[in-house]
Image (tube, rainbow, N blue to C red; front, side, top):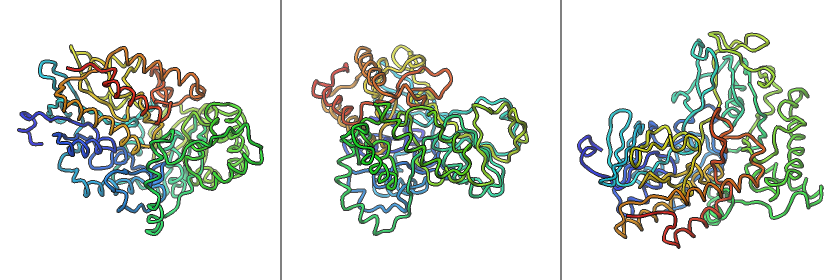
Length: 538
């Protein structure tokens, strides 16, 4: 958009965020005749994979499932690895650009700073941090659940003389860690991946672990063109399974209870799944693993024995996989690892339990704990995100009568199916709070939830409806539905970003729909068949 068109033209739809959900909206809405543009804060294609370029950053879905199913796009692209790294995902996005001609309607390096609703003309006016202005009849915020990094509150962090980088804000040109002294703070997914990579080249790697990562094997491998051709033979069936499976993958839970089968059968199943690797161990396991503590404990003990068999020092093994579990296995997202537990056998890797030995302060030379100074050249902040709502609330969104979304959500998030919030007309969220987001494979959600939104906006346009807004009553019902699902599950037994437990002061509330993708889609279809119940139109 030129400065002139920004000032005069009114878009049908402005999408904030150019990841999977954002570009799916762009492609599908353009096909239906909408005038639509995308603003993305990233410097180029990739969405979260433009920002997440730290060493070892890669998907936890196989590439075949981490792609779109529509328009036969899956027929031409070959993934080089079973689990693509950030480079591989970026290559896929550039392939999509070539196929769909996306770039002409995307403004990169554009951070949406404010969005203000005008009730007189039913329009949003959005401004960027660098002064761009766009007006749109509908606004879609597709910033994703992991777009706002969470930085640790450490005394003296700004005094460190070396390199300090959050994994979500890694230098685009990379960072050479060869023969460097590296400290990794955090052992979530990005921490696990950074530890694996830095351990191979750094002179010393010190890892501060608050909570053990109950990581499972990735079983990564390179792919040949023949491998890709073989995968394509049944991809349509696998894509079809995605919208029928709990978490949007091409597999679902085993329709048996772990506690009901014999130990021999259970162990044989787990050994086979362990050799295959991947999230099937988590979301394609026995159906009672996420709801029954006995079943969860059985698998935790199986997992713990696997870790102890790989880690030579019993004390280190116990920190990584303690006999007293940190939480049940399952209600906190595990990571996929390649050699994470093995690197702790190396002389250049040291593990510190930060509950026993926290960082007291950062000084120019490194970090100080109760046991003294640990010198470092590089600090890696693998400390996660203000998930789900953080990226949305980073935009100053002002609705009817000047109401601020950040104020409405300050103590509790209420939405209609994670799609909209009362007081903010013609505004929709994708892959955001109270949607399947964190429990759903990204491209699956982009297409499944995305089709809901595209059909909704098309229906309203065809009926001449210019204004829509969800009601406070239906939002209360949706929140109560989530609260009930949450209370009846084991998720409250594990502090996680799923319900805000990783952010100090953040309201404790389940922000990811944990009823599964099929039930979510069913709930929407019920509303659609009832004339989009829960919305008021004008």
